[in-house]
Structure formats: structure tokens, C-alpha cells
Image 1 (cartoon, helix red, strand yellow):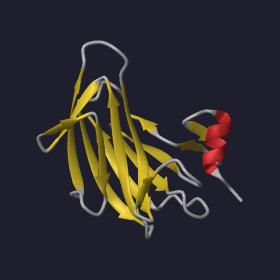
Image 2 (tube, rainbow, N blue to C red):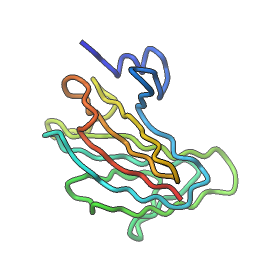
Image 3 (cartoon, one colour):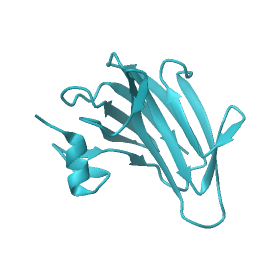
Image 4 (cartoon, helix red, strand yellow):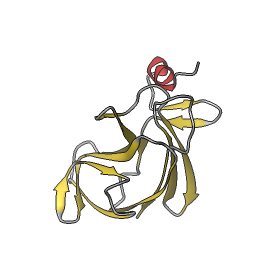
Length: 148
């Protein structure tokens, strides 16, 4: 039985080759000043979301500023606008990954969690996520991320 979490751990990487590129998290280019997150579809019975975590930047969503947000597909608007303000110096990163709720607890990077990332050009990426449950299927959550 496949266990993507074990493959990521064995290779000590956030990107592996498993029938093509597969990501545990995706790093958005650091020159970006704005993101649009668009929830496209959900194919899982588990509650699905994406987590955005910045280092060296502040994220603002609807006048709320932080470095770490979780956007749940069932409670967030279909389109979420995110402004970024990068610090002048220091390490920088903006990472995004799939998270889900099972038995009342949020999880990530377990079992068969992973993302296919389709670069659609012009700063638009389609994240096709597999949560950790069962065999890998990359339609548990589909999210479009547009970076400007």
C-alpha cells in the first residue's frame, strides 16, 4: 500500500517524483504582493482547507493581518484575496499546503497527503490535493492560486 508521507520523509524533501512531481507543500515565489485563492472543487467527505504560512512577510485577509492562515473550503468565500507585505531583509518564504479534519482534529502531511501542482502560466497554479485518507486521489480538494 502506498504511503506518500513515508516517501516524503525518506527523501527529506517537500517535492518528490511519484509518477511526476508531487509536493507536500508548495512555495509561492517571494516577489508576489497579492494572491487570489479560489476553491474549485471538493471530492472528499472530510473537511478540506489550505494553510498559508509566511516567513519574512505579513499576510492580510479582510483587514486581518498575520503570518499564518487556514482557509476552510466550507466556511471561506469561494475567492479569497490575500495581500503580502515582505520585510526588507531576512529569510523569505510563502508556503501553502492541504489540511483536513478527521475526528475533530486538523491534519496535514499524513498517510497519502500530497499535491499535484499544475502551472497554468501567468502566475496561476492549480493545486490538486490528496488528503491522507485511503489511496492517493488528487481531487480531494482543488484550489487555484493566482500570484501577482
